[in-house]
Amino acid sequence: MNAAYNISFSSFLGHNIALFIILLVLIIAYCYFEFKAVNISGYHVSVRVAVNLVNDKKTNIIDIRKSSDYAKGHIADSRNLSEQLLFKNLKGYFRDNNSGFLLIGDKLHSADKVAIALKKKGYKNIKILSGGMRAWVKEQMPIEKGADASSNKLGRSANAIKNANKKKKKLKR
Image 1: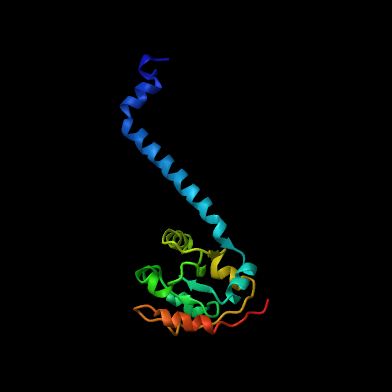
Image 2: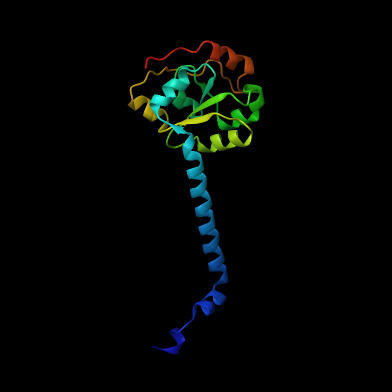
């Protein structure tokens, strides 16, 4: 073997320190996000469990999908709030940190990020419908169509949400 090709690891590392640092950062980032995903996995619930949560008058059903997707079909009494609207006036919407939340997303828009943010803000009882609205439809659960009548571009008042929660319909199990 030629002496020019006989390089030790420490010599290689010395000549390529920037590449080594980038590799190390990528490994740490990968581990961090994998741990975060495992940490949030306990929040996911099946459609069957979600039915019970929908029937619970204390659970706020928040659909974080696009309003156009929401209008095509959504769970009865759910509220269509984008992430931006939800966090813009979170305390105005939900004053009680013990309120239950069922987050509805889709495959393109994960509700995990919203669940983590709600938890950081002190909210408890956060659940995510595993598989999102597609799983709900696949199980042939009832849906409603149309825009969220109590929403507007500025969001909804806390009273509108309270009134909607009082009128929740019971789903057939």
